[in-house]
Length: 140
Picture 1 (cartoon, rainbow, N blue to C red):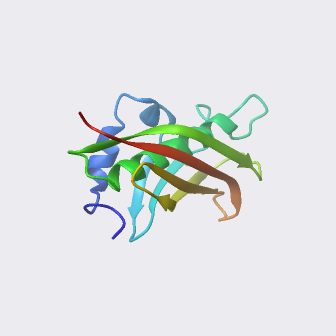
Picture 2 (cartoon, rainbow, N blue to C red):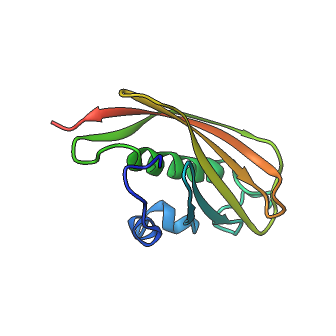
Picture 3 (cartoon, one colour):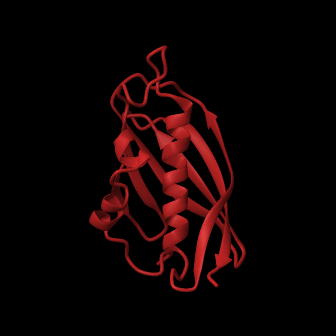
């Protein structure tokens, strides 16, 4: 398995309480051998003025998935991860429903991690693709 231990979805969802994760309605929904999945509603909290899913909300979902996956792929007693860079390409507008983000590793090194996040529409079409680079730092 990719993660150091099988993540508990209830624990992951409780971590987001009283944060932007909760405000945007992001919930972790699945864990697999090489992926983590979360969903986010397309609502007044996540739309931009034209009524479309806000690109920043996509990036918040992507960063949440990448950062949590990074944390789960290291030994948290000796190391921690911080974001270095994130990018996103917004490919298809979404007006309603729930989008699904899925994160998978591209590179898991001793000092850096790179993760790819695909965000899909309620119909399963690719809406956004993002990549996040994390630094893996040793606790002192």
